[in-house]
Image (tube, rainbow, N blue to C red):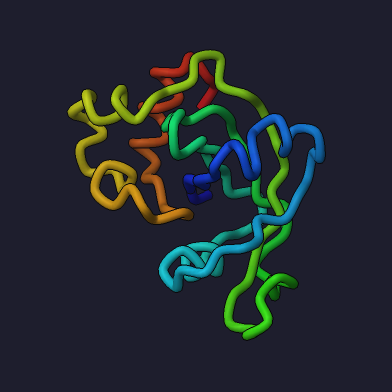
Length: 137
């Protein structure tokens, strides 16, 4: 199993929006590295749902339930999407400041390439963020 982080502006698509849908596609990605990350995803992989912009915090956990397929919003046909199922909110949202303050997370992509909208998370990073949030890893 692999782990990921999905960033979204809560004003455009929030954790509550995703929970309301239950399962929804993750479309609109127009960065090749983020798209390649989605191509690497397998059914059952888990991800953090991250509110960007003003909140800058991990707020929930999602599961990949459909692997990469063409993004209906991309007229060029170059980009794809995956389907994500909302699993659980975090008991304690973990802010970017919390992550940056934790030496165990110093190499996390979120710390070093915060603009990437879909990014990998190592198993050790996953365990640590879950520990900080009081969530089952």
